[in-house]
Image 1 (spheres, rainbow, N blue to C red):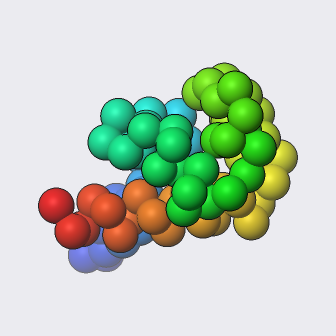
Image 2 (tube, rainbow, N blue to C red):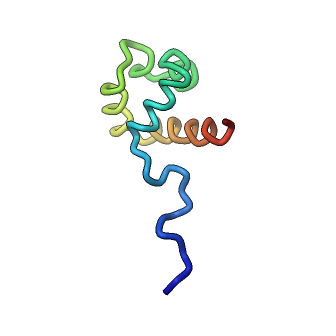
Image 3 (cartoon, one colour):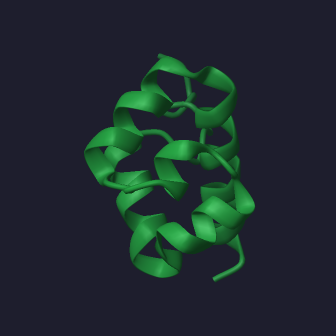
Length: 76
């Protein structure tokens, strides 16, 4: 048997995009998300549903949200 952990050392392991987004919205709000990552789903009539739809189809935007979440989570 190996001594490796049962999951990778990924800080996002086990977190869904929805959990990440809801946490950021709860802490900062859509207004701050739109300032930091200026995409329409955060700026115009924002909702969790529309944001998830866009982020799932747009890898560069999802990466920005995930990186901000990691930074924000570590700075708590």
